[in-house]
Image (cartoon, rainbow over all chains, first blue to last red; front, top):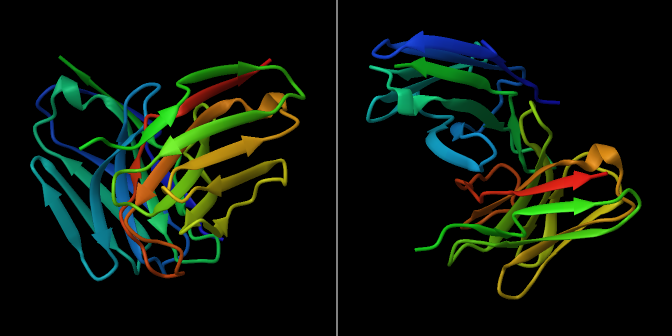
Length: 113
Length: 117
């Protein structure tokens, strides 16, 4: 059974800093990994999707990497802004019988102005 | 284009009651998945439907059921509500789905907040 862990659970940094969010998964036989953003009480917004054959994906100030062999993914946020404050979730798709995404508990990020 | 829509936004029910939540996928998307997110946790997969058939089920009791209609919209039903069913219920749609090992990017709706008292 796939398990996804996110570290740290919470993070508070001053505006302008570069930061890294970590995601680890127990079953390396994943098909892809997806990073989402969730604002309080809201749904999920997809940020980046990394296919198993890819090592990284970039969108604007965001860069996500995937290392299947070590069971890890990182989300790098450059030049953080107060608007980046949210909970960031990673989710793995293992292609099992249930056919759903397995999520971590998320990292609650606060960017101080 | 409209994204995934869900109704109602909020719902308050009493223990033992039944509830129906609704989801309309993005136009052209044929697959709908349901997730439950308890406060402070990541979403947990409940069901996936594709072409009106159940293609995947997570570890949830039989009190949870769902269906998909010919227009690809979906309903999630929960019977005999328990306090522990209080959560944000998320619907996600994708272009295709239902074949193990094939993933299509999922787009999530705003969710329905269910409170059971």
